[in-house]
Amino acid sequence: MFNGFRGSLIGVAEALPGISGGTVALIVGVFERLIGAASQLTTAVRLLVTGQGWRRTMVEVKRVDWGLLIPLMIGMVAGLLLSARLLAPLVTDHTQYAYALFFGLVMASLWIPYSGSGQRWSGANYGVALVFAGLAFWLTSLSVAGAADNPLVVIGSGAIAVTALILPGLSGSFLLLALGMYEPTMDALNNRDFAYIGTFALGMLIGLAVAVKTLRWLLENYHHMTLVVLTGVMAGALRALWPWQGPEDDRSLHAPTTDVPQTVGLMVLGFVVVTVVLVIAHRKENPTRGRGRHARTSARH
Image (cartoon, rainbow, N blue to C red):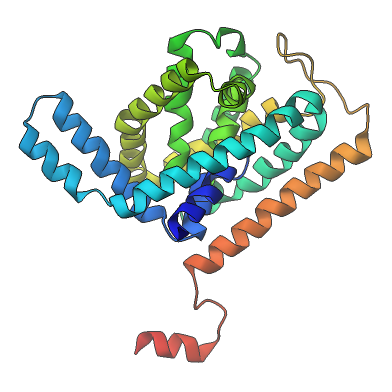
C-alpha cells in the first residue's frame, strides 16, 4: 500500500510540467530501485525479442523487483489518471494561467541540471548551452500536435517523455508540452482512447529500451557535458510555456498584455513550489548536512 501511495505521488508529478517524476521518486526513496527494476525489465524484453532463450529471459525476469514495481506502477497510473482529469480542463479553459504556473515550475527546475554535475561551468559550457537553447527555442516554435493522429508521432512522443524517469529535474509533461502533445495525451487518458494510449505506451517501451539506456550511457561517460546540453535545451524550450502566445497553429509570442498581475503571480507560485520540492530532495540526499560537527563525527565512526 505504501509503494502504491509512492507511485501515486510520482504519477501526479508526471502530469505536472516542471515537477519531475524522477525528483519525486528521489524524495520518496525509490529512484534507484525503480531505475534498476526498469533496466532489468527492458533487458528481459531484449533477450526475449532477440531470441536468446526463454531460460535466460526468465532469469532476468525473476531479478526484477516486482514487489516494488507492481504497486508503484498501479499507483502511478491512478495518480496520472486523476491528474489528467483535473489538469486537462485547466489547460484547455485557462491556458494562459496554466502556462504561467508551468513556466514557473520549469524555470525553478533548471537548477537541477545546472548544478547536477558538481563541476563549475566554463565559458565554453555556457556557449554550448546557449547554442542548444537557441535550437530548442526554434524547435518549440513548431508543433506536432496537428499530427497527433499519426502513430509514429505518438510513438516518438512516448519515447521522448519516458526519458524523464531517469533524470530528476526533467519533466515528461514538460517535454510533451514543448512538442505540442500534452493536450492530446491528456485527452486520450480522460476519454480512455486505448488505441492512442497503447501506441503511446509502445513508444515508452521503445524509449526505455533505447533512449533511456543511451541517456544513462551519456550520463555515465559525459556527465557534465550532458547536463550542460540538457540545461540549454530546457531553458530554450521554456518558449513553449510563455503564457502570452498565439494559437497552436502559429505559436507566436506576444508581450504581456492581459491579466498581468495574476499571471505573474502564478509564475512565482510555480517557482516556489518546485523550490520547496528541491529543498526537500536535497535534505533527503544529504541527511547529515547542516547538523553540526557532532553529526559529522558520528558519521565517521
